[in-house]
Amino acid sequence: MTLLLAFLLEWLIGDPQSSWHPVALFGRWTLWCESLLYGDSCMSGVIAWLIVTIMPLGLLWGGHLYVGWLFDVLLLWAALGWKSLFQHVQAVIVSESRAEARLSVAQIVSRDTAAMSEQDARRAALESLAENASDAVVAPLFWFLLLGPVGAVLYRMLNTLDAMWGYRNSRYQAFGWWAARVDDVANWIPARITAWLMLRVGRSTDWRVIQKQASTHASPNAGWPEVALAYAADVQLGGSVIRAGIIDERPFYGSDAARDANMIAACEALLIVRHALLLAALLACGINLVL
Image (cartoon, rainbow, N blue to C red; front, side):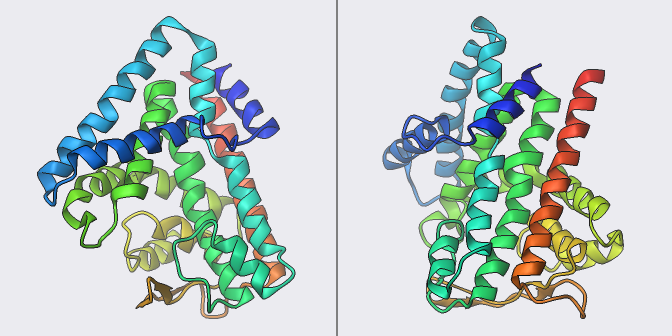
């Protein structure tokens, strides 16, 4: 019942854009703790990570124990980011001009967008869609099945900390090391499940090819759903990008004859991810009933 009601709220309302949203509150809490605890060392990062996560986790566990199922539904709903994910990506895909595509994709990626073509913007949006299909849907469901609603929200906290601290720059190289490594561990299985789901509903089922190309990605996890989507939708993803004025050299993903990220290919990729996540939801409901 918890899972079904959380899905219903996500379908009807989505991710409320409010400063009081739990993720927004957690973000402000993280910034405040960072301002007090920051130090240019791995140990400082570990201590800050523990303080940032343990205190909210205690409050959430108390709500789970004393408020009951309604609180659990709200927790799982807060951990999901299904509807907003598709809204942001679709805005890029259906953009009617290069400027509109750049403006829309800048909302969801950290790359420099000034020199992007419409095809570059669609490719970036599809890569974000693939990665966040795991981060915002499959991973919360996976941890919900393992640890319950509090587990799903704990995962979302770990993922948020990685998004805020897990950068390889002068400020966060040491301080954010622990946050990045924990997120890598938490996402290891969900990323591969997401890739498998995309292959089940897409055009390709060659797991060995996915494994080979995913190993070339800078992230131990993000490459799996990105490469899987490239093959499942027969669309070319990857390629070099610009971040903070610096070119990040990356290989292309997909077959040699893969389509460019035109609007038709991008819409098909969007549909494949939607079907993959519906399959994930059905599997999660089935497993939850058995457990």
